[in-house]
Every structure is written in C-alpha cells, then in structure tokens.
Image (cartoon, rainbow, N blue to C red; front, side, top):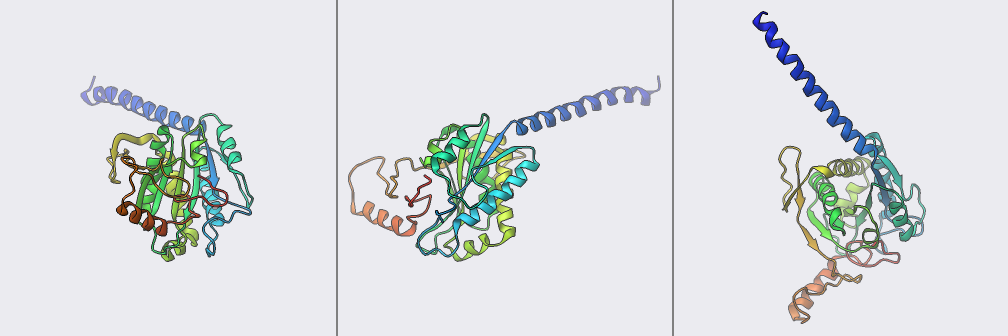
Length: 280
C-alpha cells in the first residue's frame, strides 16, 4: 500500500472520531439548554413604578424592556423562557416566586435598575442568596459588569424575598443607577438595553463554565469564568442598616459609617432598603 494512502487510512478515522465527539458535545449542550427553563422577572410594574420618589426615569419600563430583549435572545439559543410579566402589570412577589418554583430544572433571573438620592452613586451589582446560585451570579456579573461602561460594585449575598424563597438558582442583577446622569442616559438608549440583555444572556449560557476558585477579578482563561468573591449582606435589615458581625457595640465610627451609607443608597433601591412593595 502506498505510504500516502496508508497515512490517509489513519487520518480519516481520526477525523471522524473528532467530528463525532464535537457533534455529541454540541448535542449534549443543546439538550441541556432545551431542558432548562429560564424564568425572567422584570422588576416592579403596574402601580409599582420602582425607584425613589420623584425619580424621572420609570424603572418598571426599563426592566421590562431588558427582560423582553433577554427573552428573545435566550429563546433563540434554545432555552424555554417564561416571563413573570410581559406587560405593564403589577405581579406580587409571592406570585413571581411561585412561577419560578413551578418549573423543574429552572433558573430565575430578576432584572432591576438601582436608584439613590446621591446622584453620584453608580455601578453594576448582582445579588444571590442560596449557595447553588453563586455560579449563576458569577457568570451573569462577569459579563454584565465587564461589558458595562460603569463601575463594578461586585456580587453580594442578600436575602431578598425573590431570592430567598425560590427553590432554583436565582439572581437579581442591578443594571445601573437610573438616578445617575450618565447611567440614566445609557439606560434610555435601546442599544444599551440590548447590550445589557446580551450580557445577561451570555451569563446564563456560561454558568456551567464557572471555575471553583474565588476571585474578585474579571480575568478568565479560555472558556472558564472565575467564581466571583462576594460581600455577605444577609445580616442587613430591610432598613438598610447593617449589624456588626463581630460586636454589638456601636462606636461613633460605626454610626458615622452607617449614616454615610444611608445617604448614598436609596430607600427605594433593591440593594438598600424596603420600597412600598419590596422585592427583597
């Protein structure tokens, strides 16, 4: 048998095995996506405008727009998508949670925008509660914070109602401050809301690529996404005040710090305190 023909006899079967392996991997990934239900929760709605009193940009409209864009992106990727609301209606928190918990093999993605009395407050932050939600939070935050032209406020663990009561991996992403002049302007452009939806979708798709090593950076190697370090705020009360993990003594320094925090975070913000219908 000629030498070249002999080489081909070995190369062709090897290529066939490689193609088969790639096809099997793609099929497995597609099957996993098709079997996953993504419950998208657009924050606020109806009588609940979101944000703080006097806020110019209605949060409920921004969250719904991003959620609808995200729905289209995930559906195109093969996911089954369920919306807690698909129009300007008010949906109680318990109903949102019940929708998420009614699906097996589901994940819950809650979309919000932040607000504060201090106009300079800015940045992206992502919340989770259950430990099995950290990979999803890490992936979503990795992409959203990395793709936004605003500061990275980090991943935070906190017992918001929609995160605490869901039985599936759940995250709440704050897509920036509508009360910040720059971020508010970004949010009002369709291209930026599309960008947010694309980054959240990338996080959903990439949740299985999260490594087991905690990091505070966005660096990644190849297809891996670093598990994000986080701030544990599960001891923060609904009024936005934190209790010391180490002592019950209240020093003047602690009081000053808390006063500063209350002035910089909104009482209507998901990340700080309780609005009339708290989503946390």
